[in-house]
Amino acid sequence: MSERLPEKMLSELASPNHECRACGYVYVPDKGDPKAQIPPGTPFDDLPFSWRCPVCGVSRSQFVNTGASNAPAGFSENLNYGFGFNQMTGEQKNLLIFGALLLGFIFFISLYGLQ
Image (cartoon, rainbow, N blue to C red):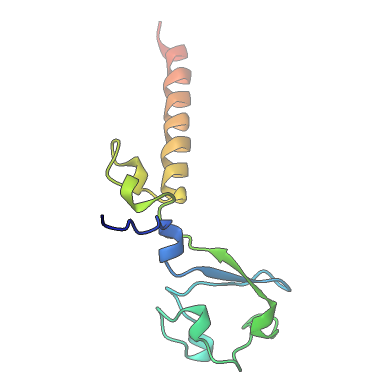
């Protein structure tokens, strides 16, 4: 029998963001830190120990992992089910939901113009 690998959440596979507890600055690995000449794509764990928050100057130990913002939530096995909504990030799902609500509201209000 073959062993089944443990299921991994997609957000665990993507590089997580880290937020400064002192000022709220969020280090996003995809953007890096241009002020400190940290190139985009550098994970937080690979930052030099001398790196400090570019806003308030606290050390790396004051940052907390907030998870990835650009990865779809859920397990990788479930991405192909449904109508493609499983591959959307939280921001994309919010835009779709609230956009549809706004469009429905506009259609509802437009009914008052009919006579």
